Image (spheres, rainbow, N blue to C red):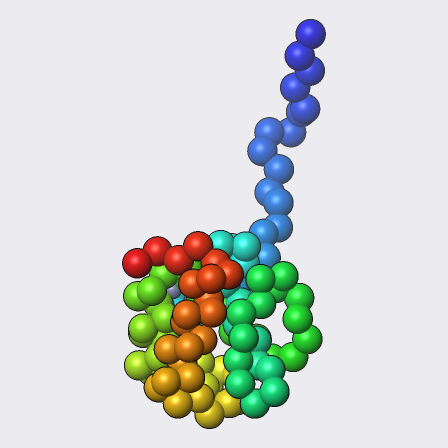
Length: 100
Ligand SMILES: [Zn+2]
């Protein structure tokens, strides 16, 4: 016998974060976190690393937008060069499943 729980759909609280590229709020687990580290930035697949962090959709487009707006440097309070940002994207690609 199947027992249905009464009360219909329960509203679960999903933690939302804003992508610094497209500025849309999305469930945290759909985004990738980047954290400031030793004057630079790194991928944070655990989402729990200490320090300042920003979120981005797992899309190349959002990374490109964030890069153009300098949102990564601003959000993390770092000063990455174009080359360092590209290196960061390479690292993100290794850690996350990124849509191109
Ligand atoms: Zn986005």
